[in-house]
Length: 454
Ligand code: OOG
Ligand code: NI
Image (cartoon, rainbow, N blue to C red; front, side):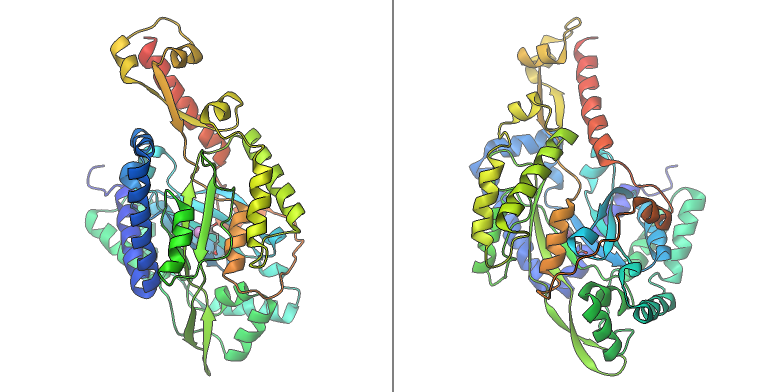
């Protein structure tokens, strides 16, 4: 239906509006964006092969666009409506992340576009967490939190109408989609006015800082936005020079020749003044983050990653802290020496996913009868580039949460991970990211075979 705006277009516009709003709300984030742009330009000048790799996979044009943000919602109804809101922009829930074992009382998914074409138009995604009130042991406090959440509506009446209209008609006109972006933005805005008294805030905060962050405010303010960098270590060291305080450790795998999965770091959340219903106070919630993405790993590669990460953490005595940051990085690098660091080996050992394409030589050579993929690669008619990891990592996410929730003692929750309960709240199943990468790789292989074996 050509009178409808494309979801990817709405998403691109929304992502831009969100970025503008956040830069206004948190100016330090604008400084971070400048630094990232500088480092990316530098990295591509120093490594022209990086530029051509990004060109082949179509990622070059999306590099400067916003990558991801995060919100935390309080109820099943909020989560289900957020799902419908993101669906208007072609974003669907991918993956299930349980943060409880890492001491954060939430479980989460990431809303994002699914296929590479849509991702290249706008890669914007939102890591969305649902508070697990059932993990609050104190029943009276749990009831108070639930009652406070029941009173708020995080959506404007107009955005609810537009979501329903989009579901009914199958899309939004250009004019309606502009209204949608404007109205949807309201859900993510910062509110200086808290919904609760200073005393209740303190009670919630004492239970877990995150619970206060979700329950005490009118809406799920966007708590960070994250641009993608091609050299996270350069950004990490460049931050301090610009007066931005980075968290101590870069989360994820160590620095490598062939980046895998995802490395992340952030600057510490700012303390902001807020008004409780009966007093002035402050709250720490919002920060900026940077990510460097690498190749998506297969189940086998991911198992090796988890094994090495766990071994490193065990040796370091748990999650890294400010105090042992350097030692931790050294331990991590030592363990990860066991992870092959050549794309060819990663491919041969089935540790990672790749995007295959017909080379110029292949196109010139034309039809080859019945050659296998390996033979086509051998002959230089087909080549491959790493398929970028589009998702998140639970251990890293927990590290990002923790560093921005302050250093109060870490809680331990042993509530079993429950994807089924999450999906019920969501009103849908989450997509299986592993199956999506495998299908994506297979499509690229099929396209090569079809083009050359015709
Ligand atoms: C989300 C933290 C997780 C990431 O990049 O892993 C995250 C949050 O703090 O709400 O955004
Ligand atoms: Ni993040």
